[in-house]
Image (cartoon, rainbow, N blue to C red; front, side, top):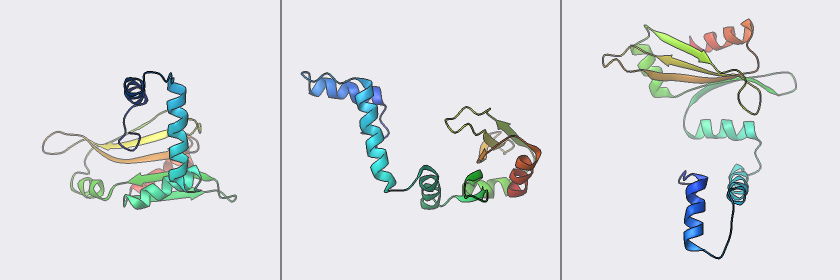
Length: 144
């Protein structure tokens, strides 16, 4: 069920229905899901798994690391959205969350907004170490 992206609460409901004598709680479900995820990593760290999934899904990506090999920035874009952006480059919106993830790194989203059907399209995602001029310059250079 985890591989099918079923929510933990729905997994718990199914288990309670099928095994009424067991009394799992949501923490048990989440712990099992984390164990399964770690098995799927096959010994890769979080960043290595992130890049592995990007390669596997054929995303175009750029990563900047410091001298110690610690990831500073990661820019990821799907090839189809690159073609859409080349066709409709007129208006691009950019927005950043403020360190709301567990790694305390801002998540930066780039969205294109002018198509013949007046629909927005996601251009790419960026995770940046900090919100400084050099970080945003790096992002804009990759976007170009």
